[in-house]
Amino acid sequence: MGWIFEQNRPIYTQLVEQLQMRIICGRYKPGDKLKSVREMAAEAAVNPNTMQKAFAELERTGLIYTQRTAGRFVTEDEDLIRQYRQRIALEKIEEFMKAMSEMGYTREEVMVLMERDREKSRAADQEKDRTADARFDEAARIDEKEAAPQEAQKGEMDL
Amino acid sequence: MTPILECRDLTKMYGKNTRPALNHVNLKLNRGRIIGLLGPNGSGKTTLIKLANGLLAPTSGGIWIDEKPVGVETHRIVSYLPERTYLNMGMTVNEAIRYFRDFYTDFQEERAYEMLKNLHIDPSARLKSLSKGTKEKVQLILVMSRNAQLYVLDEPIGGVDPAARDYILNTIITNYNENATVLISTHLIADVETILDEVVFLRYGEVVLHASVDAIREENGKSVDALFREVFRC
Image 1 (cartoon, chains in turn yellow, orange):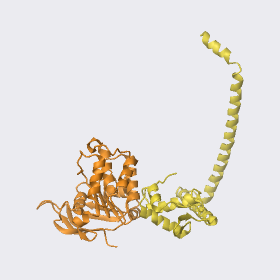
Image 2 (cartoon, chains in turn cyan, yellow):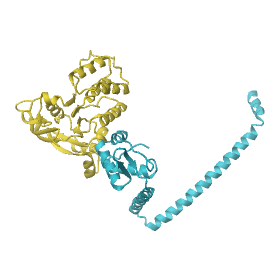
Image 3 (cartoon, chains in turn green, blue):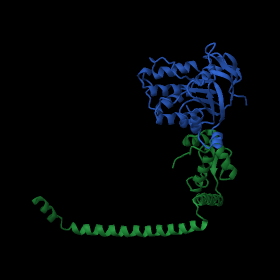
């Protein structure tokens, strides 16, 4: 996935979020060396000073670190990455809950809806299995038919 | 650090009883920035750029580059892409490069050839045989191949296709030296917005806003492009 920025929020904030996300989801792995500010800025098509600032923020939080001459690296502290992952998951849940409460749902009603959604997706999975089976059966039937194809062709040619 | 460009009470009038093209402008541009010079037609962008390059003289007030009044010494550290070409169209691209090399000691020939290659431009072609967009690319390559302290680009991406636009913006990000400032005048705000540190809005020859892109987004909850459309709604 490339770098996509929303129009209505500071680019700096979005850079920090996207860099964090890349570390959390393992696109940048623990101990990986990061590209230079310039290269990253060019890749994301953003201002190098803004990229620099975003790196500084990630350094402050410990997700990346600088080795004086060798460059910047992703932290090797996997616990820290896990902590961030969970923190962001909780933030996303909070956002979602806020949207739900704006629609007038209580937390309990949301949980009921989530449960229903889980059943639905379970049913959908089963349905997928069933159709896969059905397709398999269909394919088997076609195979059987093909055992006698000449007859059908002959009939057409008579017309 | 001292500003790379400073205007103090800068006024420019083209005739005695006309509205000033620039009206008591006070402006400081810092080093190491990419700055958008934005404003509707006739707001004074090109006038400011021409004053910075000594092509016009101020009516009153002054303009300084690297703390020196605009003149021979400042031309040496300013790389300028004019709105219209001054190159002889009978020249080949190779000849234009030689011309720049002879004229500017900070010209990096290899850099120019590298960019020509990346944009698939034949250096033996005559300028007049090139399309409008390709001519613009060649001129921008020449200007960006100098090791200047201030790049002044008057509408650098107006005529080129989106892919070349990306390449050019990329070139600007990767090529300018860390302490150099790039001043870009453009109408295509959305295209350049993410690469800018800050923007200067001009209206009727006055600076109505000088702020960082992120500060604008933060304060207004909208992009610079959206703010521009709002401020300058016709």
